[in-house]
Image (cartoon, rainbow, N blue to C red; front, side, top):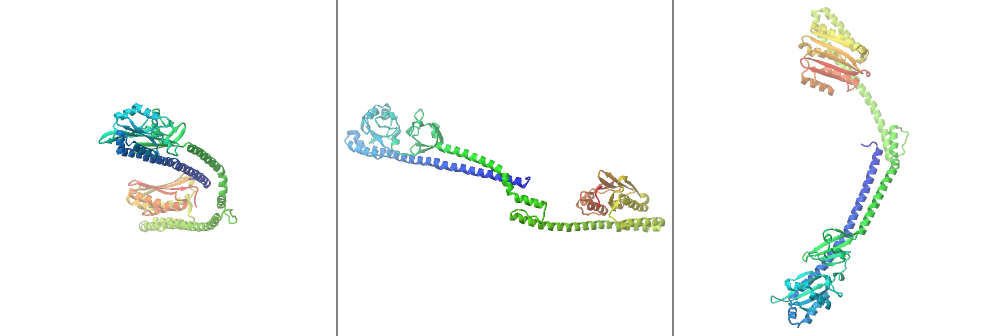
Length: 554
């Protein structure tokens, strides 16, 4: 719960300001991510796809043409007698010149001698004297074809190659010669928008690299660039895309610099965070002024509610003016209803008290008259005393006046009442009365104790050989305690629970009308927190106590 509406609005304003900034920041991060995916990742993938498509196509053309020419009759014959050499040269030159990836060709006979080639003379001598090349021709079965990287330093004078395709020329299941295609520098013949590109075989040997810094000391493409999505080369960050032409075991690695993007991201983040912090500080500083201006109408309405007046008009929006007008109307209605309800409640309270008081008269009169009927027959003098005492009681009950009487007055009434009962029951009934002298002038409800005494006699005298009733009225702090205790049969536990629940509810569902009468009168006069408590042990007796305040009364 907030301390005030002002604090609540302030926290809400700050909260949603921060949430708005956080949402904008999230959208900014999301936009950076989308931009990175489109500008860097997608572009790099597209470049990789284009390079892979070119490489796959060109390599497949070299392989397919090699397979076709290895079965060509002209190539089979030229390795034997050179009679169709011109035809073979035309075929080879036409093929390599038509390719996007240019290459050089070498045709060997079965003895390893060169039949025809597009290599320069110096490169031919280097090739024929190269131990690895001679070992390849001598020891390798080239009938199924072979392709691999080659040392670029083997070629000079403007010719170079890093990869070759080779296959044996067969005739009647016999090797007639060997045809080689040496790919020239691929970088001369295709354009790409990547910053760095590498093409490798399945052993990570470089077929082509756009920059020598991609190579390790072993002459292979650095394995780190083949396994990670990002790489740092010479303090420059790159996004890496590495895909394989699966049917050819060729890997295409292309890299796109993200240095500029990273710098833009950091500058944007720092700027955004700085702006966000400044915004929050500014909002926090100007918020009190905004709240004062915004809540003027609320403050005016609160002031009006605290000191309502029909002559005062709040400086407010029309909605607040409507609330003020409705408030005045409702206040008039509430005041009218409160006045009416107070009058009705007071009338009801007085009527209920009178009704409860009236319940005593016929009940007590019936008991006295019953006793008088027997006393007239057996003891006329005692009957005469009973009539005098009964007349005093009736006069007190009917004509005394106010509902509230001094303790002294009510105790005299109780003494007259007990005197009558003593006349009736003689030695079977004894009683004691103990009243604190300091409270004899304190006013209490009339006839508040008598019903408790009557209840003890009614329910205990017939089953008790000698009934003793002790009446005590004491003062404790600011409260008066009136107790009526007897040594009668007590109340069964189940009935005691029902009686206590009846007193708590304020409705009488038992036969103890006298107890409920006194309890209800106390609550009507002093409030629901006061009233009666009952303690009873079955077979030992009952103690009923009434608690009322000393400084409150009607």
